[in-house]
Length: 260
Image 1 (cartoon, rainbow, N blue to C red):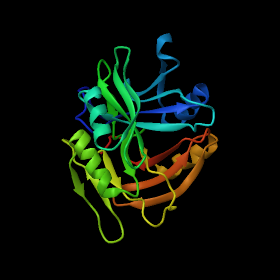
Image 2: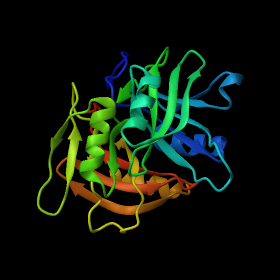
Image 3: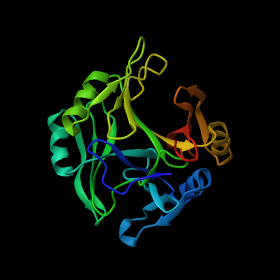
Image 4: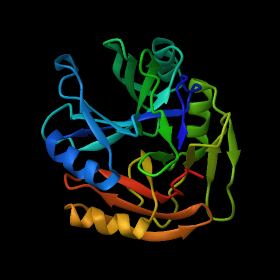
């Protein structure tokens, strides 16, 4: 299993959490699907639950914020050495700060923002919690991607805010790039293309590693979730899009048990 304890480089996906209507129900779903060990935080954490694999944190689950009509959703957090400085850069680059930076006890400092295309993401400045320690393995986050109809402007935004650089993989009929990183890339940015509805909103999507995508899709259905896109093969492994039993969407991607 690949594990990390140091803070993540700026602009790297470093944590994901689920804002959900029913935390107890979500614990059953994700604990059964991914085998997460789930530990509730202290009372001041407001019902937030930490999911881990072999003692290494991978994701969080907490009560969703906002009115009842707000959907359950997974939020991608990008690492920041200084959340307040990044919040200023987000506004200057044409994005929107939806929740100004605030301290999360001693765990770190966070903000919530949207890029100019409208994709919502979190900003995380590590304190005692550096973010995910296990990644790119079964049950852990293995890929994040930002999809919008504003491919080049969005690349410019993340470059200006976080200093991100990209390795472009675009070809005829599609636009896609990976975020350059000190290790294997963990994120991509692209245009959803003509196969997706023209009115599909910009968004960040998170993929979790599984040993067998088809078996995982079947398990999702058994647990009350549903497939959103049938499994398909790529040069990087088999993938699928699913929704949990409360409607939150996420991806599945095949990885080896060792995270190779």
